[in-house]
Image (cartoon, rainbow, N blue to C red; front, side, top):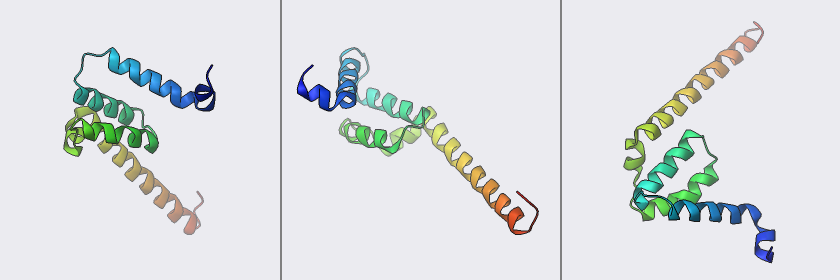
Length: 104
């Protein structure tokens, strides 16, 4: 094991996985980035994952409209906004009940 791998094992693994994915796919680079973004949205990935893929996606010509136009991405984004909206409504309702002395 070389010194670099011992210092950054997770990053090195991600680089190896990305390299393998690029070498063994039949998609165009643009399509591959759309699929990657759709997968990140589908699993509700952390913001860092989007940041790592946003630059390469833009370099491949992927736009915000492309991402919204992807059926899975558009539905996921709308679904997330809907869940956040409903969670906010439940929280406001709960606070109102507590404030009015009606329990939780």
